Length: 127
Image 1 (cartoon, rainbow, N blue to C red):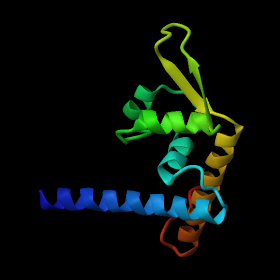
Image 2 (image 1 turned 60 degrees about the vertical axis):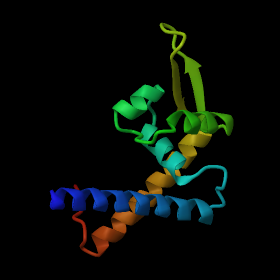
Image 3 (image 1 turned 120 degrees about the vertical axis):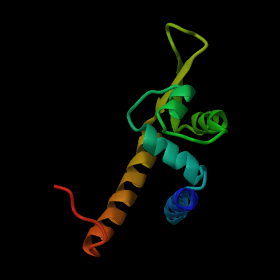
Image 4 (image 1 turned 90 degrees about the vertical axis):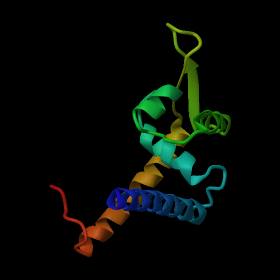
């Protein structure tokens, strides 16, 4: 049980550190209209169009305030939303071009970090 709890604590710590890395990147690029959680949400959605329920069930997002973050990202122009043709109550969201730009910024950040780990022999290169 102790190893399990230690692993959970480590995962939580790594997630917080990941958010700090994204936050630092946003600050360096003068991106102040969203937070790191919202940026990671954009990265994880990628080219998909999803509903709020799918974000949770597919593991894209584990937060309790997913609706707030989606609404904010739509309001500031990083996501678009569209009512489902079959069930008008359901709303699907996807990235706008601005959202894809943020996703690309985070992808480049992750690639730089992965390359640094490869160069320091902390991570093996994948072919």
